[in-house]
Image 1: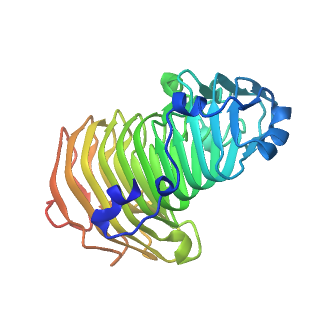
Image 2 (image 1 turned 30 degrees about the vertical axis):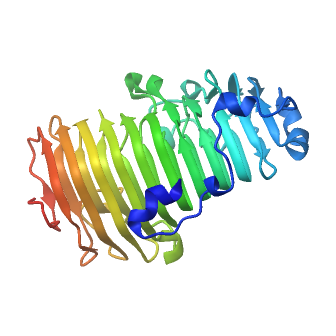
Length: 372
């Protein structure tokens, strides 16, 4: 699978599919009659130590506790029913999965429900009540996640660290958080310190970054992901003190859409930027943007203040946009580029066409193939 996606980037990738047959839910459920069922929080530790075929049923995890699923090698984990969590004002995460050569598959009607509506106060991570971070946290190697449904994240939805990971049919539904603007900082799927990642055929309705690739990641392919209400298809770095934890290399977003969002395409490094590093070989191809309310395309080194005072500890090079089309609304801009002195180079854009803007582009670096 990975060779299919990365061969054009001249990268040799070894994925889980080289050693593992990928299952759908029904096939996985019929692999054996000896599934172990986790029906309560207290049953989980013993079952994950002895079983490689596990079903997590619907139950409530006690308040302030993480459901730890530290899986044995070659495990198959199925989610069924509705998994919920008692209300507590703590750090989280709600669910933590580790393992190697594993598959995690959701049943048709399963939901991991964060009940964010019990926490949302319009302030997100900036204040108000303390909100648990991450409904799902994974740290895995050679893993497949398929048809995972997450609803109403209090603060950040899913994070992943590791290598050779595929997310297919990942669905995040934070629609309830749009009412009166109560939900904030509900980032969809974020990856850090990762390599050889595929995300495809997924939907995210949320109130911050839709998919976010963070420092230390390389060889990431995101395809057919549809975002609504988000802060865009994002790349973020500058928060570490060393280059190996800031570098981002070879990321492609392709055949994706963003609608009703704060931003569309968003590549950013922080100011202050804590350390050196390079963002290189980034491609956005066939991206449809609809009714963005601030910037359809924003590449910046003054995040989060947006004050024009850009850092230049990190370089950005080969940030390429191909067939990026769509619209903005109100006073939104088509493009904002704010690079630190000498930090940006070799941006190549073609067929970038955004309509509806009443505000001029703002660019202190001009990509080849585009006129700001």
